[in-house]
Image 1: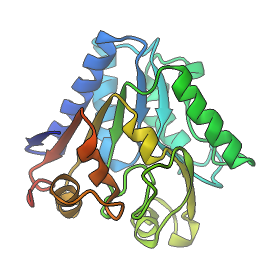
Image 2: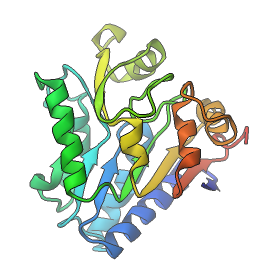
Image 3: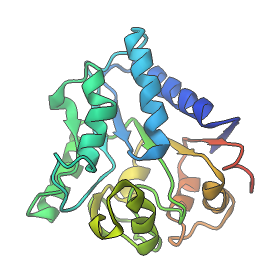
Length: 241
C-alpha cells in the first residue's frame, strides 16, 4: 500500500489524473473502474484538460462504473449515469459502446449483476479501479458489515450514507435507499486500485482503513490485502495517520 500525501484537493486530483493517463498510455485499451461524487470530480476535470492537450485519448478505453442508485432513471440529473456523461464521457473521445454502468431501472437485478460481472471477466478484469471512501469507511456502496465475498449486488444504503448524499437532492426523502454496487470481491480483483480522499471528515475513515484491523465494519480496510493500492490524500485526510 503506497500512501501519497499532498497539500490540497487540486494536487490530489492532478496526481490521480496523471496515474490514469499513464495507465492508458501504456495500455490504450485499458479497462477502468470509475467512481462518482465530489471526490473524483477534480480528477475528471484534469483528465479532460489532458485530453484537450492531446496528452491522452480514450478511443480504446473500456469503463465500468462502481455503482448507481437503484430506482433512479438514467436521465435523472442526480443519477451517476448523468454525472459521468456530464463530467467526462461527453467531453472526451470514448466510444459509447465501451461504457458500462449499472442500470438503476433494471427489473431483474440478480441477472443484471451476473451479466455485469461476466462482462468484466470477459474483458480480462479491471486494470485500474478508482475509489473514494465514505465517512463510515465504505467503498463503492459497500456499507459497514458487508460480505467481503460479495460481487456486484443490490445494497441497502445506511442512514449515514443517505444523509451524506442528501446534499445532492431537494430533500433527504428524495435520496434512493438502495443501490447497485460492485462488491468487495469485484473491487479486490482489480489489478491496480487508486483510493482518493480529502478533508478532515475523511481522516478517521482513512486512519481505520490504513492502520486498523481488517474488519467488515470498515469495508476499506480490506484494501490492506491488495498488492497494488495507491492512496492519494490531502493533509487533512492524512491528519490521523
